[in-house]
Each structure stands twice: as structure tokens, then as C-alpha cells.
Amino acid sequence: MSLFEYDFMIRALIGALVIGLAAPALGIYLVQRRLSLIGDGIGHVALTGVGVGLLLHHSPVISAVIVSAAGAVGIELIRQRGRTSGDLALALLFYGGIAGGVVLVGLSDDSSNANLMQYLFGSLITTSPQDLVVIVVLGLAVLLAMTAFRPALFAVCNDEEYARVSGLPVRTLNILMAVTTAVTVTIAMRTVGLLLVSALMVVPVAAAQQVTRGFRSTMALAMVIGLGAAGAGVAVSAEIDTAPGATTVLLALGAFVAISLGGGVARALRSRAHQPREVEPPDVVLQS
Amino acid sequence: MSVVDVRHLAVGYDGREILHDVSLAVPVGEVVAILGANGSGKSTLIRTILGLVPIARGDIDLFGTPQKRFRDWARVGYVPQRLGAGSGVPATVGEVVASGRLARRGIFRPPGAVDKAAVRAALTKVGLLDRIGDPVATLSGGQQQRTLIARALAGGPDLLVLDEPTAGVDAASQEAFAAALGEFAAGGGTILLVAHELGPLRPLIDRAVVVHEGRIAHEGIPPEPAGHHALPGHDHVHPHATPEQDKICVSPTDRITARS
Picture 1 (cartoon, rainbow over the protein chains, first blue to last red):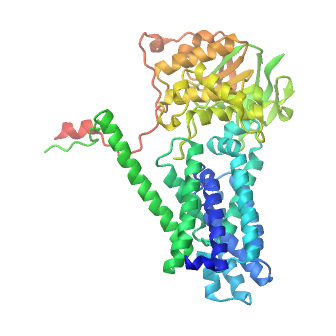
Picture 2: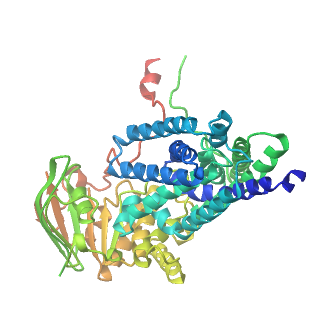
Picture 3: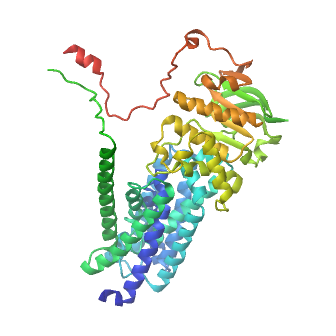
């Protein structure tokens, strides 16, 4: 493929593959805790970090990691305090984040609309060699943390009270997960974009769990789907000139639909082979 | 030495006191049932003992150590009322039970052959070894409850704390449950359980403690079932024991058909 003769394409592809593996490895815990949308919120906060980076002529990736990690830890502390006022606090933080980001990016020297769009929706050409090093190092760190601590993180996400009675450092593990979410969001913003980051954490997991039976197998299949969608997303978007993030997400959603349909058909065939299903009587019987 | 020693405990949420001046000692090897109506504070009592609810006043010692400084949580096996609400991410019975090994192993060490053997042994005790690879969501309520006791047993605890273990559990699972608890007690284990009614667990109980309006109202041998509860074949059903059906609207079918 001729496009992959360009260095920036190789960099975009490597970055996308690392994120395709790391995002679902983290996302499975977020889905398990019913925090599927948290990545989206942290993406909003990360935009402020991007603005700070551009304004100070620093790497936007590093400032975004710092700001979104601070935001994620703040969200986790709000969550631990109790959920009643947490919902509103989250909304304030998210909208403050995106508004601050738009204003700060506008104030910076490099304040074009195209620049803002690159961070919101991803772009193939923005990954510099330094960015790629940051993406690969942080991505591998996320992957390592999420797989090495899988039993403990599973226990915390599955039954937090039981984990506390087991004497696990629940608060530390929750903070670890919050920081990891922020890191994943930030390194994924180059290829997928801040507004679609969450999809790469959640959609491969949603697709995998249609056909898997256990947590570990779900995690493994979700990582395979994420890897495939990210790699194919970069290739397809380069070929037909579409936004790489949106293309990747659509491919992942396509995998979800295909696996759901395939799994449904397989289940139907299996249950038909075993026994005819009983139809439940309707709740309401209208008599004429 | 007492395994659990509660002295003059008071607990409250949001300024409202739920337990007032409760004292309770559970010696090694005893099986104690905490009985009481809904809202009596019996669940709050064990949740405070486990450190899930903060102490307002008074002291709790676990295995002779003040609860605040107690770190040896592998000696305590907790069986909650039910499996946390499924989030859609599947988990196998074996994976859930394996969580019970973390207290003993710590979070840094990956599971080894000892852990796998302990998971299989715990599942054998509750009669669910054949379901080890099945998703927990496909199990019945009683089987899920047995999975939770297997998770607690997998860590090799000295004390089991159970919160309403038999609520909404089918008869076969209750028997399997009672057998597993009996084996644990026969091996010298201490059990503290909260219950609405004892059912097949009754022969195991050494002492019953009745909590009423945040105080211990009665202590002694378990009370005999009285009134219609004592009738043979009495099926004691609690409205909260079966989860609400997930439907938008449930119509009173009988009235609709009768009126036409």
C-alpha cells in the first residue's frame, strides 16, 4: 500500500494499534462498573489540557495527560463521597473542561478551526515522533497495569464491598483506574479524537460480550476487536480520505452488529436443536 | 478469646442513630444467628463489624485486634446478600470464586496452582464444581448464593459472616448451603449470620440474638417457629425476596378478563 510509505502514516498506524489494544483493556472495567460514559467526560476535560499545552508551546499530549488525570482523580473522589451530588458535579466539570479548552485553543497562536477539529475528531497527520514515543510508552503502561492487576480490578468492579472486606486497597485501585482512564483518553486523542475516545473503550467490549462466557475471554476478544478496528480504521480512512476516529468507531460498531447477529443466530440454532422454546403468555388478555 | 467482640457499639447514618449500645461477643467455633425484622439494624450490625459502616461510638475487636488496626482480612469470609447486579460483562463462576483468594494472596502475585486448587475445593463443597466455566448470570438465585459462599470459603477463613444467606433461595440450594456451613462449623470455624428465618440452618445455630429497634432484645437458643410459621409445608414468602420483574407495565390480568 503506497500510503504506508509515508512516515506519518506508519506513526499513525502504530499509535492506533497501541490504543486499539489498551482502550478495551481498560474499558471492560468501566463497562463492568456502569461507567461507560466516563471516558467521554474525561475527554472533555482533556481539551483544557490541550489548550494549556498549545498556549504554553508545550506538547499538548503531556499537558492533556496532567489536566485530565487531575480531572479523573477529582471525579473519583466525588464518586467515593456519595452519588447524590456527584452527577451535577460531573456535568460542571465536563462542560467547564470543553469550554475552557475551546477558549484556550482560541487564545493560542495556532488557533485555527482545523487545529481544534484535529483534537476533537482525530487526524492521521498530527502524530509527531515525540508524540508517538509518549503514546507507545503510556499505552504499554496502561496495558500492563490492566492485565497485571486484573484479578484485583475485577474484584473491585464486580463487588466493591466484598473487595473492601477482603482488605484490598480499594481506594488506591480506583485512583489507579481513574488515572489510567485519563492517560488512555489523552493518548487516543491523536487518532480517534477526544469526542470518540470513549467508543473505543466501550464498543469492543460490548461486541465481545455478546459471545463470551467469562471476564478474561471478554477482555481478550475485546482487545482483538479493538486492535482490528483501529488498524483497519487507519488504513480505510487513508484510502478513502475520511476521519480516522470516526472510521475506526464505525468499524467497531460494525463488529458489534455482526457479532450480535451471529451470536443470536448461533444461540437460536442451538436452542432449537435442544428443545422448543416455550412462549410466555401475554400479561394482558383483551377479550371482545 | 472472642473472634468478634463488640462493646457498647452505636452506629448512625446522617445523624439518625440505628444501633444503640450493642454488645456482642462471639467465641471461637460458635455459630450465632442475628435475627430481627426489616429495619431492626441487624444488617447494619454485621456491616459495621466488617468495617463497611463507620463506628459512631464503642469498640469492635476482631480476633483480639481492634478493627481499625485489623489487617488479617483473609481470616474473614464475607457472604453478601446477593451477587452484585450484573452489568452485562460476563464472568464465570470460577472467576467470581477466584476473587476469594485475593485476601490471602495479595494483589501483586498472580494466581498459582494453590489458588486454582482452593477454588475447585470451595466449589466442590457447595456442589457447583460442574458449573465452574459457566457465566454466573445463567445460574439460579440459589446457585448464585452458593457461588458467593464458595468465594468466601476459597480464602480459607476462620470466621464466616453471612448477610441473609437464604433469602429467596430454593429448597435444594438451602440444603446444599446448610451442608457447606455445617462442614465449616464442624471444622472449628466460627459463623455469624443475619437471617430473617432460619429454615434448614436451624440445627446449626448455637445461639440466636434478636435485634429490635437497634438494641439486642433477646439472646439464647434459637426460638421455635410459632403460629402459622410452624405449620408443615408453610412456604414463607417475603415480598422483597424475589426481584421485581423488569416490565414497563404489569396489568391486573384477572380483573381485565373478569370485567368483559
